[in-house]
Image (cartoon, rainbow, N blue to C red):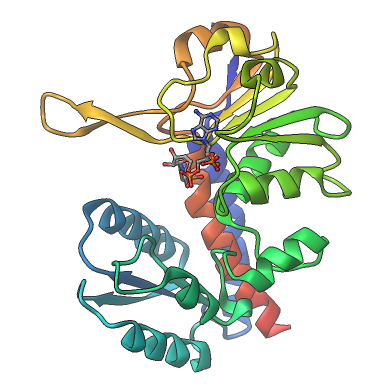
Length: 292
Ligand code: NDP
């Protein structure tokens, strides 16, 4: 294999040590970061994500405040809970696990979170701050991708970055982040999507190629420039193993691409662990900002 593997799990552990030190510093000032985690319904994937977030918080000394609501919770009740959490000084971060059941308008719920507690970075105010290059909360997966690239020593300034996917939670904010002025940015970014023509040609120009499409193994070796850094955000369930556990693969055809790329993230163990660490980072940042 030619590519250097960027092991997100290891980077995420290093990051958590740094976050832990900040939690200890806050404790010395009498502050315990509080993260309200709201889960509506019993979707198994959402339950598993929420478990991971609560576990990470507990390990770091962040107080996770659990709010598990039934699937038929009316929107008004959820908005009422968010109003209470916004007003609660023990809560520094509020996270509502998505997707939400059909009777609830997701946009309405996200907009009901205090932007200064919006540790997922999905509130329009934080999206606006990101677009304007002002301090706010950056969505966790894009922030994690940038952190992986920077810590792996992948140059970004002046490089060609191609982002496959333009979603509100991954592709779009990542493209803004990497094209921002300053350290960890300054890249020339192309955003591709399902209407892009000549996708493979765009990809072949990329010094850094980020795949966030949700299309199993869609990025093949012929689409990768030799030596490029390839970041695979995709998490696709492609079947069950003998024990009935979901088999995962990314958006990148891992084996052949590993022969050609300079850097590559695996799935699982790549971007995924970074997402949770960045959520913890945002929660501690929210507590630090409030503490002044
Ligand atoms: P969305 O479905 O919201 O967005 C997918 C994007 O990819 C869209 O912009 C879509 O284009 C584009 N796209 C889809 N198919 C193609 C194609 N064949 N060619 C070019 N563009 C295409 O997904 P998300 O952004 O939420 O997630 C993307 C992937 O990342 C998923 O696999 C998801 O599971 C994973 N993920 C992983 C996380 C982690 O922590 N590791 C966190 C979040 C997501 P269009 O806009 O035109 O429809």
